[in-house]
Every structure is written in C-alpha cells, then in structure tokens.
Image (cartoon, rainbow, N blue to C red):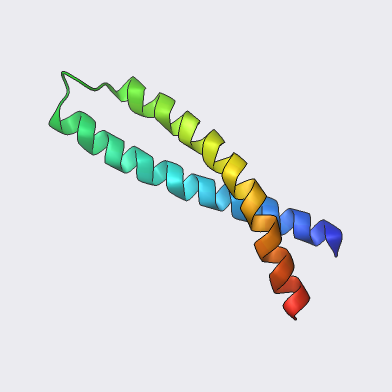
Length: 74
C-alpha cells in the first residue's frame, strides 16, 4: 500500500509539472512572437526548466497528502 502511494504521488507530481510547464511554454512563445526583439526562444526554454523544477518541488510536497487522504477514505 505504501509503495502505491509513492508511485501515485510521483505520477501526479510529474503530470502536474508537465501541464504547468506546457502552459508556461504556450504563454511564453506568445510573448516571443509578439515582441521578438525583447524576448528570445532560449528564454522560454530556460524558463520551462525552471518552472518544471519549481513545480516538482511544490507538487511533491502537496500530492502525497492528498493521495493518502483519498486512499484512506476508501
């Protein structure tokens, strides 16, 4: 049971981080397309890495508690 909780927590954290990273990419590329003199694609790619790492740190502390409550509720 404990191993399943860890597995589901990692999957939820990865999924959350990927969604947030893709949202950052979409919004960042719109900014690059509207003002290419000020922003570059490299800025967006570096920001994607930063957003992914930061969201993994935050979601890794949030999801285990949420998933544990769901499993104990059953």
